Image (cartoon, rainbow, N blue to C red; front, side, top):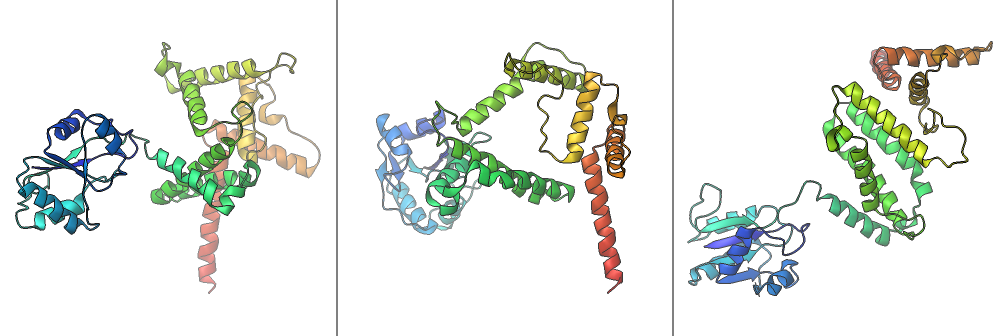
Length: 343
């Protein structure tokens, strides 16, 4: 019997399933292609001593070596696949094609061969690869090495809009790629911040994750606490109340009086800024609403009319920013269609 033991490179060495440990402890021989395999020290400390073999780099050569070990009379041979191997499909194909390799069984493996997953990635484990890749870029790439929070600021704004464009186009493969670019900005900024002392204003990607998890738990007491809600509207109401309490807790004692407008980001696009201020104003009970803007000048009147349109969109359950973008895209389509008729 040949067991191909597959392990995750993202799980700490030695953290293997019980069937994996059972196979390792009862094996006649445990073979590995390199002494640098991350599982080797963990196995050795547990009394399992892998034997390093001169494994050919191609699947056919490796299959011949492993089959020879099995045919030599060893009743149980374990091959420790290179760390990070997901499925040893090429090796299975090569084993099936060798004389004595046997026909495939119901799992797709040749007779006398089994694939055993000693450890598997948990959801989100591949984010470790993102962090490791960013570390390498920051230390090895001249461009990445010279970046700062400030120099990356334009990308922090542009990447979400590119993701939004992919979503509007209904291109979910492009959206997947663009979301990766958005994630890169988070990881990049975290990597830069990690270079500063933690005792100062430095922080790591784990600190960002911890802060996010704590916030999500705190703002979802109906999920993680004992609060009961009956609707999504009640969830939003609780969320707003929790945010208000958080802002009050962060405000210095000598600060100005609290306002519903605390935390509004003025750097966001004008339409979304208007929508957020209108929501906050309504929550505060402000009587003016969208009718507040005025003025005799044409420009002021135009601004007031735009604000009223944002309020109308909110009343209709629409997002003024997205509706304007959709209208602009319809206009772009009409212009392109017209241009084709002029050629």
